[in-house]
Length: 221
Image (cartoon, rainbow, N blue to C red; front, side, top):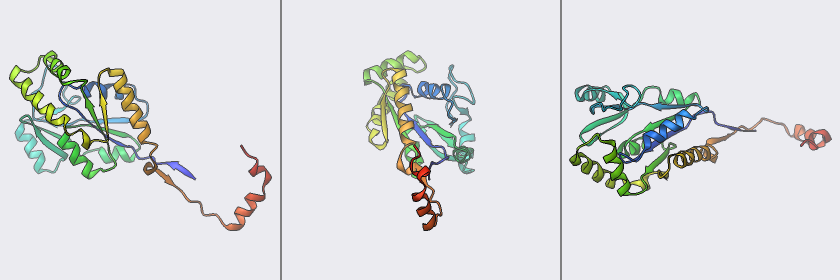
């Protein structure tokens, strides 16, 4: 008898700033009826106008973040553009063991650290259609100075050169298409041989002969 493992899958999604990973994740959660949970990261960066505390991030001071590091609170953490970002350990294994898929929206360094702990995690990198398009998106957000945008662009260029560390790359040139591709990746991953377990039934040889002689059993569709 073959049955699907009931454990959820860990989905790591990364992207350069402005590539649209937040929008894609929102769509994945909005359309979900399969049981998914987004682990909300903790950060020391300042709250922006479009942020919702507890939903986009859990916001803390740098001192509070460093205290949580000492408490071994994070699964992984990193410093990105002068701000700390971390993934709380709490609830992740609990959700996975209940068959709930867990989504982590994290930076490249954090994704690499997670893969060391969870090698079975699905890692997906969201790519902008082009670097020119990325600059336009960063300008359109109107949240950073030109100097900060240049800094983010340089960081994005470095990150894009790390895509080979990921299992999959999805170009976000159209949000609906990008979401569909991520959904297809998750669906395909759940059919991988490693995620299927075989349950061997204890059956005696005489019972096998009996089944082979049972015409009704043989003729079943």
